[in-house]
Image 1 (tube, rainbow, N blue to C red):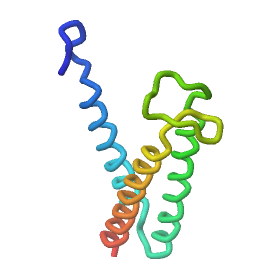
Image 2 (image 1 turned 180 degrees about the horizontal axis):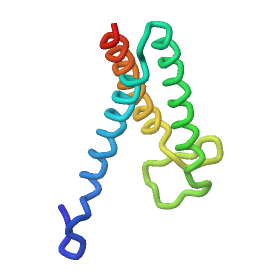
Image 3 (image 1 turned 135 degrees about the vertical axis):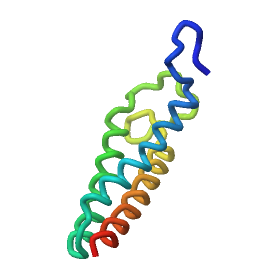
Image 4 (image 1 turned 90 degrees about the horizontal axis):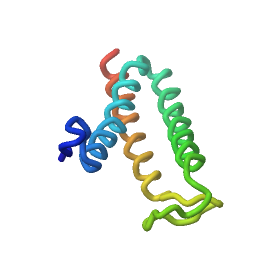
Length: 109
């Protein structure tokens, strides 16, 4: 719920829903546009794996090296982050990417 001081700022729960919707929608739309043929479909699916790897790397490198009040975080490879959450979001994005790849290939036939 927006505060009186900042009426246009959404609450953290609302922001999380928007981010999750973007994690699903953006890969779906991009893969649908890019995938056109069966040959290209395979390349787009592999490209999705590269995007997932980049996302995990981005999440890891963006994590702090010291615990900064995150009660759910754990230290892994010298960083304090939530690898389970990052992996879940990456998996959801990749599933949306594969769905978009299939839609794009089917639409172009």
